[in-house]
Structure formats: C-alpha cells, structure tokens
Image 1 (cartoon, rainbow, N blue to C red):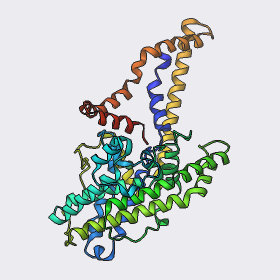
Image 2: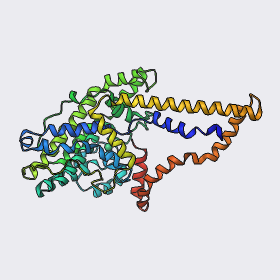
Image 3: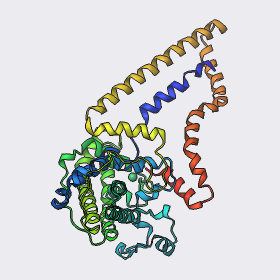
Amino acid sequence: MRAFRFFPGLLLASALLLAPPAARAWSGKHHYTINRAAISAAPQEMASAGWKWFAQPMAFPGIYPDLWKGADPEEGPRHYFEPDRLPRHFDLQTLTRDEAAELKRFRLSAADLGEAPWVIADLADRMTDGMRKGDWLDAARAGATLGHYVGDIHVALHCTKNFNGQETRQHGVHTRIESDMAKAFIRPEDLEPPPAEYLPDVFHATLSWIADSYALVPVWLEADIRATAAAGDRTDTEDYYTELWALLGDSVKDRQAQAIGHLASIWYTAWVDAGRPAIPRRDFDELPTASIFSGVEIPTDGEEAAKQTRKKPRDPSAEKYDLIIRAVIAAIALLVMGQTLVRNIRKGGRRGGGGGNWPRGGGNGGGKRNNGGGGGTPSGNSGNSGNRRRNNHGGNPSAARAAARTARRP
Ligand SMILES: [Zn+2]
C-alpha cells in the first residue's frame, strides 16, 4: 500500500503536465481575437455611431460557449455542421430556416448534423430585436455568443463528420491544426479580414461559409498526412508543425480572417435591420457568463480556465510562466516519489532484510492498487459534478446522444 502512497500526487502532476491545452477548435485565445477584431472591423457608419466603445465587453465572452459544454449537454451541436451527413452533392443553399423540418427530412438528429447555421441565424435575429427594442445588453450577449459559432464554422474540421481524423487514422488532427498550430504561429496582426458588408440573408450566407470550410477538409487532412510523413511518421515534433504550417498556414490564417470579416458583417446587418438605432452609452462593463440558451453557469473549473485565458491575450509571456510552473510541479512530484521510494525500500529492508523485498512489495502494491480503485474517485467525482445536470436530461434520447457526442468531440 505504502508503495503507492504517492499515486495521487503523481496523478495530479501527470495530469497537469500531460493535459493538452483546451482541446477545442480555435483556442480560447483565437475566439477572443475573432470577436475583438470584429469589433474594430465595423463599417465606418457603425463605428462612428459609437459601436467600438459599446462593443468592448463582447470580446471576451467569445470563449464562453466552449465552457458551457461542460454543463449543458445540448451545447455541443451548436458548434458544428457536417455537410457530409447529407446526400452526396447536396446543395446547402436549398436548406431552410426550419431546423426541425430539415432534420426530419434527412432523418438526422441535431447531434448528428450540427446546428450552427440555425443557431447563428437565430442569434442574429435576437441581436436585431435587442437593438430595435433598446435591450442592448441582450443584443450584446447574442452578438458575442454568435461570434463563437461563426469562428467555429470557419474551421474546416467543424464541417465534416471526420472531425478528428477518426475515419482516416489521423486521430488528434483537429487539435493539431486548429489549436496547437494556430496558437503557435498565428499572430492577430497578420490577419487581414475582408471588409464588413450588409448580408441580405444571414442563414444562407452562413451556409456558404460552411461550404467554403467543407471544401478545405481534404486539403487540411492531406497536409496532416504529408507533414506526418515529413517528420518521420511523428506528429509530436517541431518538424511536423513546421511542415504543417508551411502547407496550411495561409489557409488557416485566411479562415480566421474571413471569420472576423463575416462576424462584423452579421453585427452590421443586425444594426441596419434594427433601423440603425443610436448606440447608447452602455451601463455594463461585462456580459453575464451564464449560457444565453439554458442559463447554466460555466462549471467552476471552466471559470478558472476562463480567468487564465483572459490574461493570455494581454500577456504573450504567460505561456513561459506556465512551463516554469509545470516544471516546478514535476520536480516536486519527482522528489515526493523519490522520497517515498527510498522510505519503502528502507522499511522493506527493515522488515524482510533482503534486497528482494522491493519487487515483492511492488507485487503486493499491485494487488492493492485494485482496492484503490477508489484512487480514481477524485476524477470520478469531478465527472459526476458535471453529470448532475446531464442527468436532468436523462429522459431525452437526443440530449443523451448530444452529450455522448460532445464528450468525444474536440
Ligand atoms: Zn466551439
């Protein structure tokens, strides 16, 4: 038993060391960048009406929808749309705003197909209503939230059922391209968004952006294959990411820039459709963190992640400090492991008096490790806390499917 006393510390240190950065498409930093840059990309008439100052609190909440996933099983499908679930060569422009009817027509669930275009169009309408009725806080919430989904659908791998390369033996490609590579190489100042423009039909404009992303799916997957081959069949090396950036950098940068311009276009369209109302001096500095759909709050660990991410865009050196902190934790964990090991060897020596005791002790510990199945309890508990709300949806098969799908989706 003693031989395994250090396990919790080891697990904690391992988790901190090995946990990948948030496994989602654009990282939180990029969602923040997209929303913030879209505020500055407003057409002149909107900017001079006071939009830039009013919209400042809409930048950071661009990351919230990813954090809601942990508390709301219905959040996941809002982040993607998969044209390859539809009949071959299907023209996306023939889809209608009636989501329920379209899902029924193709016998797909929301979790199967994804809901992004409907959610974006609905939130654009809500933003317009808010501006028209003078509920500017709600308009800002709707606009900030839809910014996240606009960012997501400009990511090619949010527009295919092979979203993580699982059908082509390219597991992890999602995070490699859109989070790890993008974070390492893309600088906001290098992005050149197209000018914002009025959109006569936000829903069908969104579908055309999805079609553009979908067309890039084979290109992005092929780049992953070529970069892997160039790096000696490895994807965890600098060679891999350097080659991947050489092959895909321009494409990924362009998608992010397009997302910024398109988001600014939706916000501008909402304002024009609302009748170009005077933009008030806002009486809020922050937007609520709760989901605009269900009202669920961001789980506690998500709030902590949010705080950390909030600092990152302002402080590029933060990643260095992360590394230092992780190195210190690793050193402490190794020290504790070493001390425990020495203690056990000494005790084993005192008890059995033979050098052969350590392997025997290890064998005993192995037996007890099973008893310590409760050793998994801490992580099990944190999972349960996230599951409480999921259980509320237990009677809803589509919600359950969405939850299962969300759980395995980046
Ligand atoms: Zn997302």
